[in-house]
Image (tube, rainbow, N blue to C red):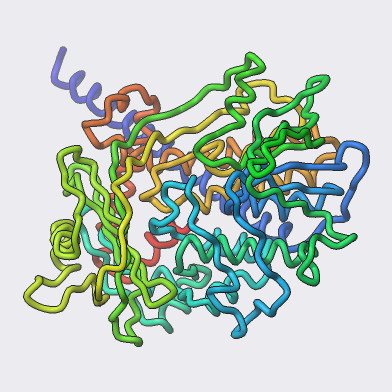
Length: 523
């Protein structure tokens, strides 16, 4: 081959590579724009209750699981069904809604939720990303005010978060005034998972008329709550949902509950998948194990009252500091809640405050002072260790492609029951809110439950592509993940890695770059 031919061939290959990268980037940007546009539309729709259609096909609905996804789903279903029943396997008593839980009169006791035994990550850090805050506020007006009144902190991603990523510390954050001007709409609430869930439970039960006057549901109450009750089977009839079989743990009795629609909000257990498989139908499943172990710790918060940093964290990925990450949040009750994680099976999860600080310092030395001075993360000051959780294995990241099979009319799945991700990215609550907004859109846009079922799974599948690939692209950098070569679309994964590296590089050099990275990570 002549020199000129070689040059031409190289130029063609280079051009093809550029075209491929541009195509991937264009696809990602277009998909992002579509997702964000649909999210804005959802906010408008969720803020306005539609006329309740009722009718033969929308008489009753059952939600399996009464956690965050299940509570939000119940709020939506009450718009479209005559009666909604929440089946909760744990014996969680309904909140007392007879007092005033609004504004300054609220207290942590008002929203108290007992520790969940069946939710492994219950005591760990949870992020409510800005879009999730806005969706929850649309469904439960006053949600943010209630969380703040009970000790949560209103926070701006561009002002109150100290973050390092890919081994690079983001640029100094702008002042509150700059953040309000340059990054509107990036407000979140920093508090515990228990407070988030407690506020949602209180709002749902009070607004629906449950426990009016301190007793059972009033005559106008269309919400039914069944704590300590396990759903054991999904019942189908003529190719559509007919109801659920449940087992009451207190009375040791089984019972059938009729329903035109059943929503699986059982979390990572994914009971709906087992029930669908029992019909002889198996949807496609994308999955991999991120190989992460994590543990959480609670400390007394001795931080100065006027300290603006509410959250400090590292998000390091292969090949930068591959093993260790952490996040610390100043939550209600004068506490700092912190979670550490590692991708190394040989790593020792800290068992004491000293070990914890050593672990944090190893992730990013500038974020933890030496033990010779005051123990701190960012400018957070840790007091006495109040408690800790046992080290937990994250478990498999999984996306159940219900859109790939014929689904019986009336079956829906939301939150972790359809897609569960590596929780260290903080997307869980956001994904649950997104699924519930898709459920609202499907029920609002269709006349029959069968049409709503089909539309919901197709819509949610389209909305889930980016949320699945973003953590996937970084998790699969870990060479210990055996299934990393089983995932196609290497171009998309490479683009996400490049985007993350370039984004953090830009964010480390300017406030504008910091804000842009925060905005990308806010949905």
